[in-house]
Length: 278
Ligand SMILES: Cn1cnc2c(O)nc(N)nc21
Image 1 (cartoon, rainbow, N blue to C red):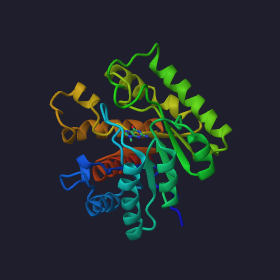
Image 2 (image 1 turned 45 degrees about the vertical axis):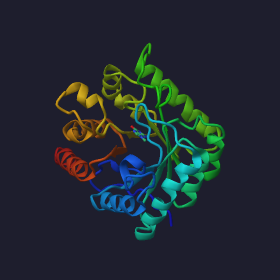
Image 3 (image 1 turned 90 degrees about the vertical axis):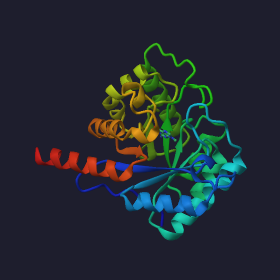
Image 4 (image 1 turned 45 degrees about the horizontal axis):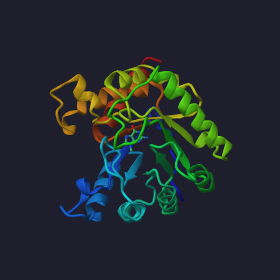
């Protein structure tokens, strides 16, 4: 039985825990992924309160090198299977731009295809429609390897909104049900600090489209641009929580984070305050 998202009684958004299954995250120092370590981290995130695990085998951070399909599948499938063997109720999203990887992951029990490329890959729209899975369509200018070289927009909010509207229309035309579509402005994917801030300040505009809104700012570099003491990813918890709480207030229904326990606690307190005020 595939897991489905049951709304939280306090109304807070769902938390999507990040599980990057890449050599720089779960390898024994060599090329190979330590499946048990990745599985255990995923199980820990579920224990911390993650509603969804976002599992990805190809890094999408700025400057990342592409990974071939077989390698990507070899990384993610054993981890999905190992986690679901221990937690059949686990709700998993597959973070990939490749239709075959998505198909294999959905076949292994994943619920959502989280595509930073918004299903623009060859055959991706039809594949997603055939899979009848939930999808996240995210905006990215360019591609991970070069997207941060010189991001430029006439009006970033308008352009990202128009792009997401077009991709949602294409997804529905391909046969993907509206209630299975989440949109995402893609913080840090071909954006300067000013672009990221403009998108976050306008976030409720994106929530108003009638689709789900998925938001991910966790540990991203824009936080260091605001607070230069946040030199490494681990030093960005405060900024990550601030962005998560802002997104929740703006209407995001799924928030993608590394620090699950802290984010769940922050969202619970935010919801308790909001509910007391009603
Ligand atoms: C894979 N990945 C990294 N950052 C992300 C973000 O902000 N949104 C989505 N949907 N996926 C992301």
